[in-house]
Length: 217
Ligand code: PMT
Image 1: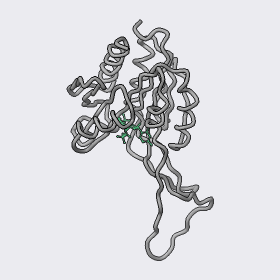
Image 2: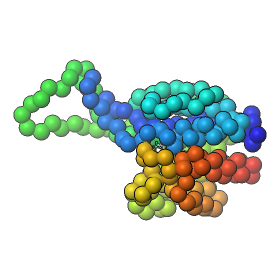
Image 3: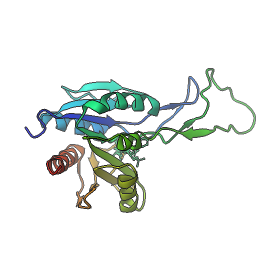
Image 4: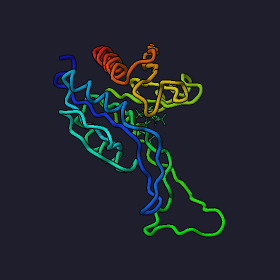
């Protein structure tokens, strides 16, 4: 099998950033894209670690599964496994901001508006890019406009080998559904635009591109 003997780390799903014991900030990621990648990678022979913020989808058989909540948790798990893996695919939708202060008691209703200050989370992918030695690093870019421009900026800035761009406003693409429409950008400037496919077919194509390009190194 093409991924025999390869260790693949995949992140999936949303993160949840706590405000207080009752409330949190999150996004629409279901984890389906990442879980499809994990399942297809196992079928191709890989040893898969799945770090996931989603917990409502059945975990594919044969993967090492780690459930996390926050971007910070995801950062810690990913960094722990990073030195031992050959490929990282970051399909998770990680929060860019978290509340600066987490209340330990429920925030009570009060007159007027409630202001919450947010601070930046760590950019996990950027850290991976900085510390890359032999790993093949794959990011995702979820955009609403100028997909190619932003995807290529992320590829460069985060020192990636490949980035999978999806326009989350396009019908049939992005969050929650069973299909996606992605364009794959490689660091060697080659581009592969895929049509509307199931997330499983999309995952197979993404893994196929990784296998093709890993062989070039
Ligand atoms: O889960 P589904 O419902 O199936 O939906 C799939 C998806 C839309 C979530 C997926 O296809 C997708 O686009 N995932 C990336 C979502 C995202 O957060 O994109 P971004 O452009 O904001 O981030 C760029 C990259 O940096 C991503 O690989 C992300 O994992 C990574 N990142 C972002 C912020 C951060 N603090 N750390 C990161 O590692």
